[in-house]
Amino acid sequence: MVKAPEIGAKAADDKVQVAQAEAPDFEKVHWRSEPHLRKLYAFGFVLMIASATTGYDGMLINTSQQIKLWELYFPEVSDKNKLGILVNMFSIGSTISFFFTPYIADRWGRIPESPRYLISKDRTDEALDMLATYHAGGDKNNVTVQYEFQEIKETMRLDKLTNRAVRYSDFFKTKGNRWRLAIIISLGVISQYSGNAILSNYINVIYEGAGIHDQNQKLGITTGKTILDLSVTIAAALSVDRFGRRPLFLTSICGMVGCFVCWTITSAVYENSNLQNSGAGYAQLVFIWLFGCFYDIGFSGLLVAYALEVLPFHLRAKGMMIMNITVQAILALSNQTNLLAWDNLPNHWNFMLFYTLWDSCELVFVYFFYVETNGPTLEQICKIFDGDDAAAHIDLHQVEKEIAQQHHEDDIVEVQAASLKGAA
Image 1 (spheres, rainbow, N blue to C red):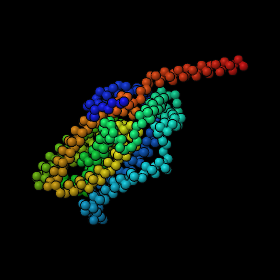
Image 2: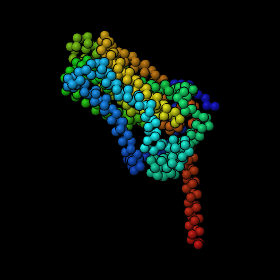
Image 3: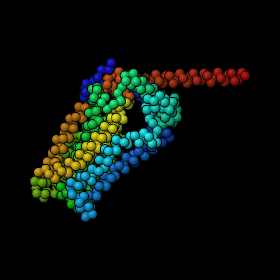
Image 4: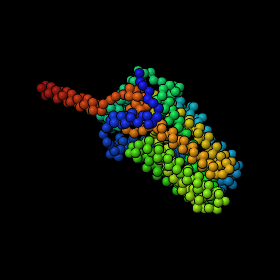
């Protein structure tokens, strides 16, 4: 029987270290040097573009509010209450679509199934072909491919032996699954309700509150911030394996808290000066930019990746559904409440103070519950949550020996066949 671990990142430190120490030392291959990896990255680029287009609508609405003609052409929408509804339309539509989109994708989707899915359906030959095609240029005897193949098969076997759950209620049945559930829900909440939503959808009211009224100046600042956010996100994504997931998350949220502290102070100084202290007004923009940078370090590039890593195969699809519904629901809530709070609190700096305290609570949660997942394979990460017996145990060196032995036997067969042919 698998013994459930204590919940908490600190309680799992030893398990993390063991999992990292036991992680296989695969051959180091750079994607630019291999044709099959270049092809795989090209497919990934298409997915990236598809994802980027979903953010265009929100960016368009956010930027349009900074243009004076917006209020002239859409005077009713410019009303704060109706503006919240307009901004929320995308989130509301996304939330509704979750209930039928998966069925449409399963019925008419054209993307090949994953090797894990194929193995779970006993289509092992197809799974091996896919792993070999995209991970080793078609070489089925590649050590990495064979290790992945055997590990996934063993994990699927353990799943069947233990009758692992496939219902949403199973997230509540074990400590490990409850830990996972807390993480994926928190990812949805933190990524959308940490003060970033008002910057993404109502940046114009922030500029006005900081004393920035010129249209061209607003657009210039927004352009610079967008370019900086993109640069930081790319840099963080490229360094995630070097620094690890947990350090990036902690750096991100610590920086967010620090920026809100400074933003609160400068906003209070600006408002207490009867909006005359322009230096304090411009200082707010500095901390807005810095806040965006710190947010990008952890939650722009790791949101989906970290959720996928902490979820085991049999709960991965349902877990991602929970996280995405949380993201859209919290986004809809924040879009509607942020503007109301901004307009109705006694002072604008009270709004920043709220997020200072709220982000501090998020920091405590991340510190105690977010565990490091860098190093182990997806199948081995479950050791951290469910204990050592929950993971498949495949020795990379043993796989290498088996492949070498198979090559040796094949060589002997070829030599014998050649000898018989020569004798004939």
